[in-house]
Length: 72
Image (cartoon, rainbow, N blue to C red; front, side):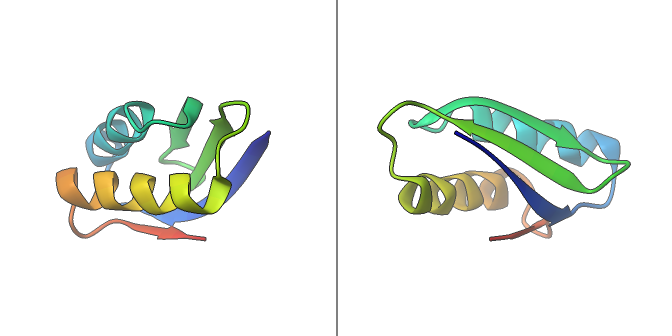
């Protein structure tokens, strides 16, 4: 399953950090963060709990870029 989320991030480098952090979260099969459109597209692994996975993604992204926002 793929879902797109609106994000708020200040620069393209920060978006790349968020993408790398999210890619390493269990339950995430693939992720793409677009700085220009301020969107994050997440493809979830089969059987993943979407809500729990996204909470982990938010935590991972806040760890590398504390002023970013992901609107769930």
